[in-house]
Length: 93
Image (cartoon, rainbow, N blue to C red; front, side, top):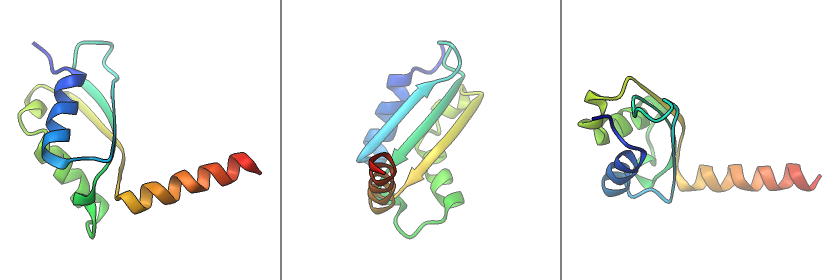
């Protein structure tokens, strides 16, 4: 049995307590490939590679069955807020 989107969301939510989480099953439903966008206070003071390692560690069991994991964004809440404000400014212009 493959990994589900809900399973990935559940693991990340329980281990990283994200303020924003988007998980997309990019495998066509078989659970072998996911794209993730995550915002968590756990990323404060961490470099991008460390953030990716935190996400991979949170999905340790799931990674045994996932073929591809694309971490599109791994941001702190402040970075997320700045990005959202920048998007609003661009769309208003």
